[in-house]
Length: 391
Image (cartoon, rainbow, N blue to C red):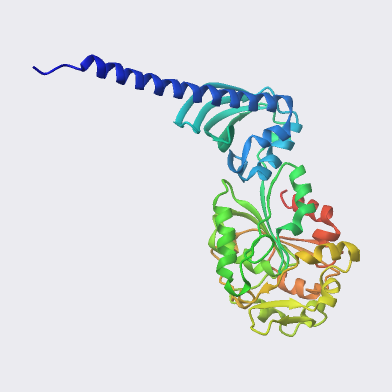
């Protein structure tokens, strides 16, 4: 006779089910506790605690403001927003999806004193026993206080550094733009700043790919700013992504026609300390300006000690992009509103050369009585011009 074990099997399955439910309930309880703590810190204005709740590589998508990658960028969004008076945050209709013992996703409606909206993906992960935000996707669907500038839709600036420098050059300019509620992205092109790609391996395509990938992640068209040589780079990016560029700004930059190149543009230029002292490496893979003439060429109007502090961050300039021949059309590049910021005391691109490049091609010209690097010598004036361009 076959013995029946059905009751025993049922007991085992019931126990496993109970254990599974118990674990899920434990995770849900922990997640809701972490979420409530974050909400409490927000309402108390604890901006450091708000930022520290995110992982170092967290991604926040805040519609319509943009995408913020990394804890630092997320902090730079939340800090002025909270300090502007946003508070009384509440979650309603909250749902928790348990992915594993160390991962869960919250979705919810939210409201606060200045607006309301929805959270579509608030992903929490457990790291070393602490729950942190890995992804935070939310949207503002209604604004209650139209006079609160932090809740108004702001612009996104993508500031592209000059040759030899890096995204760090924009620090003081970005500070003013952010204080006015805007998103500011200051990427390092390959071989510059924190990117250590070897110069011989870099082409214009690498520069363009870096920028298009960033721009493609933005929800709305951006204000694209190119400094010096990288006027050529932003021109090519605009050609490829015309629907993602709201306005194009040249800061004492190369504004060239189709087929133009850096090497072609500097041929025969007189009165440029940079051109007079420009050299290529023996293997022709990178370019540099004679060390004892660098400040005179680019930043004669800042104190020597300030320039000396920046010198360690100056890098060899990859040569291949300098040889690139620009590819643009009237259909794409030509339709974007363009603005030029000329620098009258520029010893790298003399004012006569700047004016010859932009004549008849831009909507408006702004003037700074500065060297080639007003981002160092006149950062607030430069930032104010970038703000003025929005009007």
